Image (cartoon, rainbow, N blue to C red; front, side, top):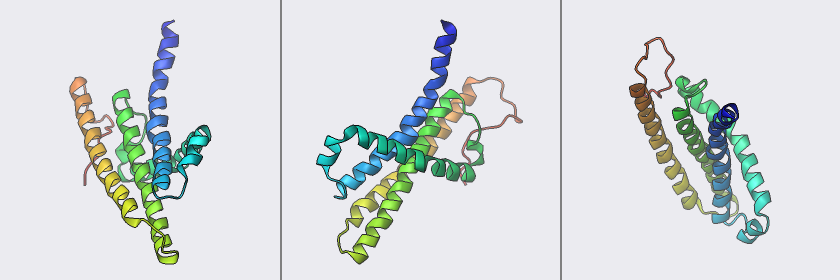
Length: 168
């Protein structure tokens, strides 16, 4: 019985990663398109399960790019994370995915502005600014949780790999 519970608890960080880094960015992307008038709200309410599946697939497409960019900029994010840091990492990847998707939609809206005169650039620009701040604050939260983790563990050697994001 204990082993079964342990197996389930080991999967919880994976579920959190799917939720924060994949599903939520896809849903936010679709909701941005609804807000911009690209998708009708009635269509979403009639096809909610399909929309959630599409949102999850959008998250699966964008998440490797987000993780790759973050791990390239911050090499200490690579590798397996402690459970305390795993949720913070998934939140960071999720917000960074939202930022990338908001930038892509902003570029599309600028294209529409110049070629069709039908765009809402300021709405999408506000999403880009929002997610820039969210990523900045998630980096701070990740560092704070990392410091808390160091305080909890009494034996930390200098040779041990750290997961703190080094602000440059």
